[in-house]
Image (cartoon, rainbow, N blue to C red):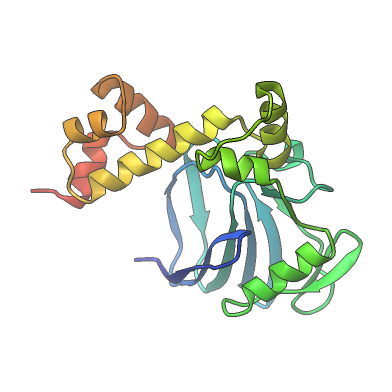
Length: 225
């Protein structure tokens, strides 16, 4: 393993997960699609690199160098920064200007880099200063809660708050769920029908797009027997 990491959930309404890790050697892999975006803080060879990453609408290659320390803050769908539209973030990374030491510039202010332990405190400050906001409609729709918004309004809210359509996010979520089922021993046939794919070909196309592997490749990697 070339990355050693620990991940935890968060009780914050804004944060999906917090991950902290170290790279022990150079590495490269295929990363799955990410319908959420991240703030990433990388320390390597005496340098500090604060980055906003994604979302990414399809699987792609990712590489890293050894001896780096990385902190990932993954935000829930519907959480966004109004001053940074997703037209600048979708399928890309944005390097934030470094200030001094372990601090960076964001919306004309300097911010100290968060830690694995105080990520919620950091995010709460972003919310308090209105750098970070949450669209409650997007969150409600993705959770299947009732709402009285017109479809056109919902589409606009999704584009503004996620950079994607509701359907794109649902398709990516389903593909990631399918991958998880296969990793945990579910058969390809059961996975196909449990998640409502039309047939195995439909599942294969979805996983190749969003995960970067076929169902058989995923199953064989985790259960080679």
